[in-house]
Length: 60
Image 1 (tube, rainbow, N blue to C red):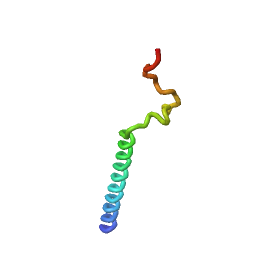
Image 2: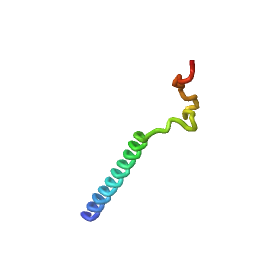
Image 3: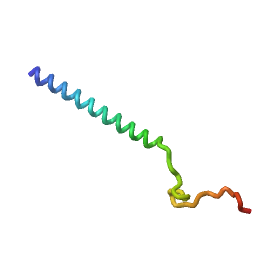
Image 4: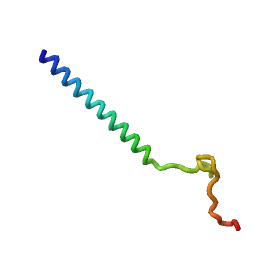
């Protein structure tokens, strides 16, 4: 009976460590995605389909 209880405790510890590492990796991936630089323009047009804002240079 003691061996079974010891095995259950060890297995629970292993699963806890695996879950904690998986959660930490997910948090790191989310943080990396949230703080990554964003390319807001593709070929001179904004990603949302709108035209780039004019600076007014050359327009009267």
